[in-house]
Image (cartoon, rainbow, N blue to C red; front, side, top):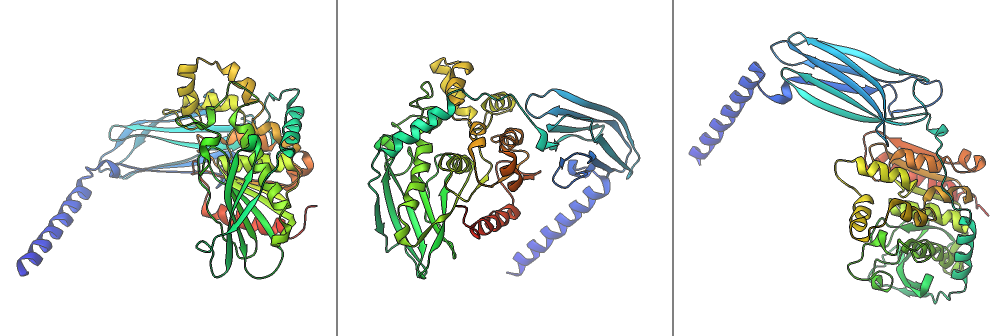
Length: 447
């Protein structure tokens, strides 16, 4: 045992000595140069009259001078079109610093979102740091591709759904229920008589509870959701869950299934599944559900489903969506193909295009009926959106374009939050904002 302690002591002393030597001679890459870049605004989003820019601090940690270049390149986040380019000769004395604010002005850039690359190259160090920032997002506009019969198409779809008997089943699950909540397994028929499944959770204390309807992300399965002060309905849309094969054959890709046919595309049924979830709540007031206080909620595809549910039913108090997808498909295609690696939904689209030989133009004839942006003017309740600025799946400019399609009255009551260092996710702070938002929207019945 004594020998073991001696060996450990020797090893620790050796590691400390190595670290000391490396520190003294500055031989490790991570100790060559320290770079700190901070936006003028914490969330990197600038509105009218606010100066856009970044503060840059370079610290030479080397015992020798460093020389090289520092470049700044500003590009449109979707197309890559260049807007600003700066090239600076760097001369850093040993242990010296370079500190400078780089202003992009108040009106220098048109409304939009931009990638800014900070490219550092010296005799000891090379690195590129990329940030996303927004300029006047509330003024971003784009060419709308909304079919002339868009409203007629969805009105007819809703009318057809209304003729399909839901055949609701609600069964208490004693194993999933808790001391404070009853959990029910629910089933219902939806578009094309596809059978849906999910869970209804209700606090056991007697009362009338407002309801959240929760949707999962792409191919996600729902689970019971427990809230202290309100009931929760979680529904699996078609193509997932125990009845998945009724709507999606084995080995089929979900988001390309029947994409050639506007009337049979899988998302026609998906969005009707979401509407049927609202129908379920409205039909089960006898379970202690307050049918005048409903909030729809989800993230990623679930966020899109929440927003479109609000648009198609017009019977909910609010929608809350984290990183909603499928807004402005044309920009998604452009942006997705510029990524170093294909991400959702472009991975699935490109794979399908290889053997189907469909063109973008042919696909857009279908997707224009399912583009999130084209539903926004139908929404009659406030919505909350959270976005990561570095999100390649839900590029912030596409979701912001959709948000700006809300009617002025609804937009004034709605909110969109941006998180500069996140991708397809939101911060812990935003989860708090979500719950506060839901609580607030439940205070007053919307109808």
